[in-house]
Image 1: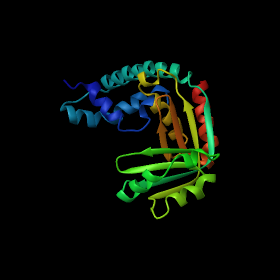
Image 2: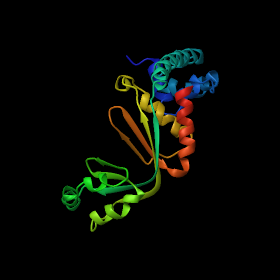
Image 3: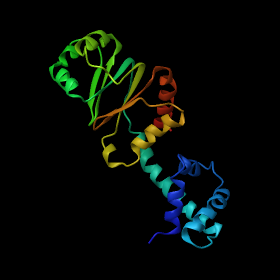
Image 4: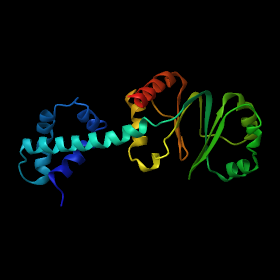
Length: 218
C-alpha cells in the first residue's frame, strides 16, 4: 500500500539536496507542506491535511539524521587524500581499430616512465588518464586512432576509503555531494574497492580539497 509518506518521499526526491536542506534546518517545513499539498491531494484523490504532511516530513527528517550519523562515522575514518595535478584525460570509442592498437600497446611503456596513468574500459568507450609528461609517448603509441575527447589541465583527488565502505550506503553520495555543493563539475570518477579518485579541472582543486577536508573533520 502506498502511503502519504511514500508520496511525499517521491516528491522530495525530485529536488536535488532538498532532504539535506531539511535535515540542516534550511527549509521551512510548514511552507514546504503547503507547497506540495495540492499535488499530493490530486495524486491521492482526496484533500490532505497539511499537518499530516508536516508530520510525515519530520519523520523523514529524523530518518535522514539517523542515516547521516552512520555515514559520518565512516567519513571520519577516511584515510589519506592524495592530489595529482597536470593530468590529461583521453576518451576512445571501443572500435575494432582501437582494440587492435590497445592490445599491442604495452602499459609497461608508461610504467617505466616517471608518470601517472590509469586505464578504465567500459562497454562502449575506454578512458585513459595520464600525467602530461607522458603525452608524447602515449599519442605516438596510438597514432592513427582518433580519440573522442581530450581534456587537459586536470587534477585527481584520491581518497583512501574505510574498510567498511562497501557496507555503508550513501558514502559515495556524501563524498560526491560536497563536490557538487561547491559547483564543481566532475570529469571522471575512478574507483577500486578501497579507493575513490575524482578527476576535476585543476582550477577547482583547492575548493574541492577544502570541501573534502571539512567533510572529513566535521
